[in-house]
Image 1 (cartoon, rainbow, N blue to C red):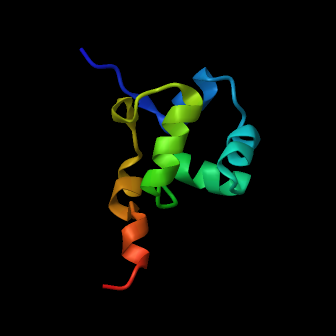
Image 2 (cartoon, one colour; image 1 turned 60 degrees about the vertical axis):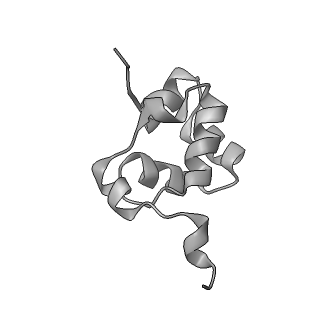
Image 3 (cartoon, rainbow, N blue to C red; image 1 turned 90 degrees about the horizontal axis):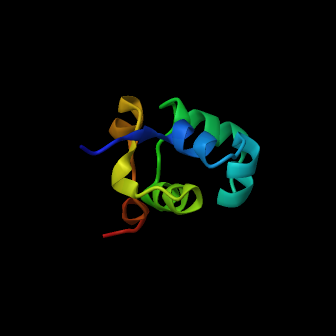
Length: 80
């Protein structure tokens, strides 16, 4: 059975504070907090980096439901 972990759970299990995660991702601590609480969109690049930093597989990290509704990818910002 696959065990899922939240963004915050993965971060805490890796022994990181929100500030340390923010520093590693190159973003502000408040954005880390917002992503963990489903208040900000999670770019795929951030999710991939989060998994790499914490040692979890991307497929094992679950996202807050509000975040998945707002999830964006970098291709949306390019013109078609």
